[in-house]
Amino acid sequence: MSMPDQQIPEAEPVFPLLLAAELQDHLLSAGNDLERLQRLLNDASEALMTHFYGANASLNGLLHQAAAMPHVDTRALHDAMQNLAGAVTALQFQDMASQLIHHTHHRLRSVADQLAREAMGGDDEGETIVEAPPVRPNPVTQDEMDAGSVELF
Image (tube, rainbow, N blue to C red; front, side, top):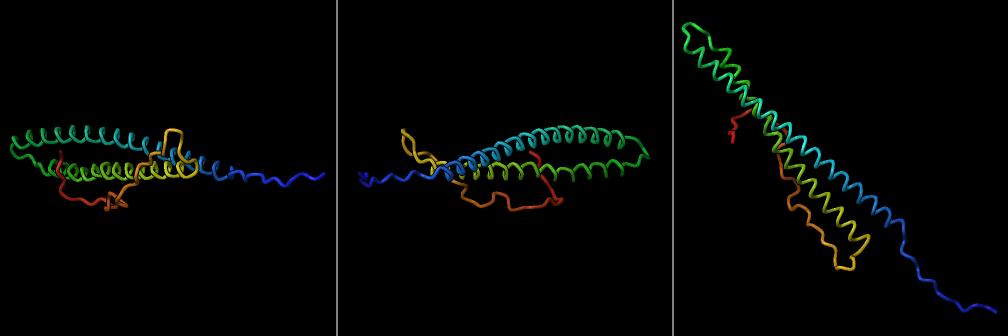
């Protein structure tokens, strides 16, 4: 006795789903790393600003004291003020780095969400919401720091 031909429905391949889940995990981990980097940069920037304003106030005080004394050469203090002003350029780095980190985090999150939606489909509650990727390819076009005048907040 032969069994009637029964067609066994093809199962969805499991490997792409597992691969998609693993890729999504890696993308989300990279996003978490970027968030930690952002916090570290913010802390370093706050410390740099605190020390900058403290050094600036100290140098200004010394410059005023020296200016009141006859025959005191204040060139060294003026040079120190110039060097301090030049260091402000480095403070711009934190702003540019923060923009790039936010942009990259946003892009990674969007790709991870798209990957999950495509691989796993919607759920019982409806279509999975995927945040649109950033519109601009790069929020910061500058890739180096040059000295120049900087306006502080």
